[in-house]
Length: 446
Ligand SMILES: [Zn+2]
Image 1 (spheres, rainbow, N blue to C red):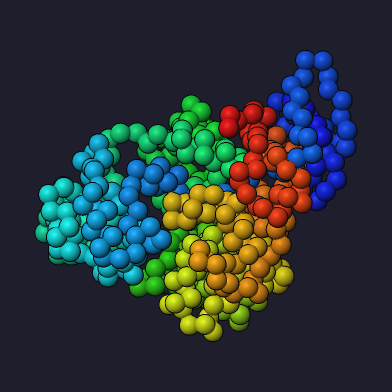
Image 2: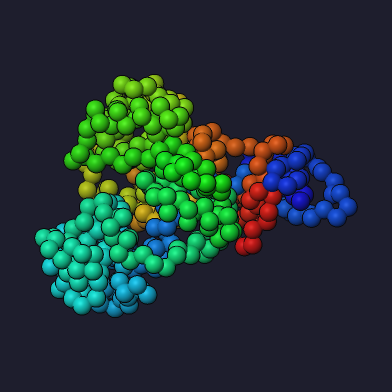
């Protein structure tokens, strides 16, 4: 395949020839060989395909079949009751809802849910992803009829097991990713079981998932030729922080030759994670997921450790109006930092955390550049980065997400072609401009 008349994001003209799954040749002006497929970019922009460095594939498919019961779609108790009363159960018999936030109608428990949906199993996921709220019929179906509150904290496996059966259909999600120019994803769900890994591996092998997939679970030892194995993910919770236990875990993962990825959304979690790394030592590829709050005094620690931060700028837009209301103004600059981390020398990569964030990486790029909430308010504007830097957040290698890939001969033929000039692409940062996505030398259908 030959792509001609394109421009690099930095401006210069470029043509790219692929052979098999690699870029064979790049130049300002390449001439087609007989029989070669030629794509005329007509002055459009060619970049390496995007990599979403933190996403949850299965949950994103499930969320597409769930109703949203949180902001911005649902904001009041009346709206909450109305959407649930109108909901139809999925084929497994459950009503599934996601995106709940306490600002809608306060704390939920089995009794408040029974008052809205008494006869059909109902489960509602808090938007943090950590908590499920289940009504009484649902608790009985889960074998937890005696549960006092119906508030199930980090029980994804138990909740999923009760409603398993039908295989996850990844195809539509993969097509949406391709439409956004995404050629690879890092599946950030921790502790995937051997069966989970088998099904993901099959989905890639059978072509349901066209993207490259790197997982953050321990290799089960079974054959998974279609998956990459990256850093091993661990979620930290404030209530159970344990420096010694975490240090031992980090040392054990490093000893097996893998890096770690620690989920840190509070200052306490970041302190314990960085202290553990300082105690045990850092392995190439170690990462901090989210780094939602970074006090200025801790930026130096991140620089010294040399860990990569994998952030989600989209939350600045999606949740910013609540931050402006709920977080003291003096702490706004600590939220979802970008520019101060990058200029201090911390490698930073971008991701969407779908389904907890919107799946569109271009929306995340706009949020990184504009630092504006859904309602249009500015938030921690000093953390703005340029449009080009925002694109680069999604161009990293999976194993080295803070370092952008380049269009060079010999690298993977993973490409994203946009229908507009670099100037327009950088101004709009809009996924609608993606005109073709190439993965491993193969052109994806739009
Ligand atoms: Zn996540």
